[in-house]
Length: 341
Ligand SMILES: [Zn+2]
Ligand SMILES: [Zn+2]
Image (cartoon, rainbow, N blue to C red; front, side):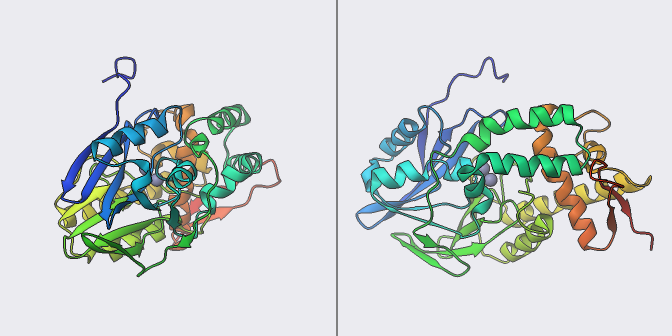
C-alpha cells in the first residue's frame, strides 16, 4: 500500500504463548511499518524486551499495546534491549522512568548513545567518512538533513544500562530462563535471547522473517565478519519459533539462518564484481554492491547505502581480497581494488 493511503496504525498485542506477548508498535519510518516489543510474565510483573522508537504519541501506543495484554506500564519490572537502535531502545528513558525499572543492555552501545549525546560531532564524523568515500558535496548536504529526523532522532534521551548484558547471562521469567547470546554485526550492541525449554528465540534485528541486512558501520572494524560469525553461533541453538524485532513470529529456523547467510554471500559477490574493472570509490561502487543495477541510490537511502557498501568492502579487505588506495590529497577520495592473486 502506498504511504499516502496507509492509515496511522494502532499498536496492538498478540499472545505468542501463555505469558509471552508480542507488542506490535507502529512506526512512521518509510519501509518499516512497525517494530515489535515483547512482554514476558515474570513474578508479579513483566519483562519488556525492546520498547519502540521515540516519536509523537509513541508512549501512548506502547501503553495501548500493554493494555491489550492486560498490563500497565507499572507492571514492567525490567527493560531489556536487544540493541541500541532507536526503534528498539528509543523510549528506554521514559519507560524506565515511568515503570521505575532497570535497563539491561549490552555495553557496546556507543554506536547509538554517542550520536544521541553529541549529534553534531557524530554528523561531522559521518560526513568526513562520506567525503573520504567519494560522496559528492551536493549529496552530503542531504546527508545532514537526513540525520536530523528519522532514525537518529528517535531516541528520547540517553539512558545508560543499569546492568551490562554479556554472553551467557541469564534472565529469569515465569517461562524459564532466557540466555543471552552476543550477536554483533547488525549493531555492535546486539544480543539475542534464547529460551531453551520453550525453544523460543527473541532475535531483534539479527534474524528477520523477511531476511534483511543492515550493518552499523564505523564502530567496529569488520561488521560483516562479526555478523557472519554471530550467524554461525546462533545456528546451533535449538529453536522452534523466532520472535523477531519486526514482522510475525517465524518457524523454519535453519532455513532462516541460511537465508541470511546467503544474502551476505550474494552481497560479497556483487562487491567483488563491482571492483573487477579497477579502482573505484565506495560511493561509485555502492549501487552495484547493493543491487541497484546502474540506478542511482535515492538521497534518503544514501547514508544507509554507504554504511552497507563500506561494511562489505571492509570484509573483503579483511579476507585479503580487496585493498584501499589512499587519495592523492585530503580532497581526493580513497578507492578500492581487488588484490591480484
Ligand atoms: Zn536495528
Ligand atoms: Zn529494528
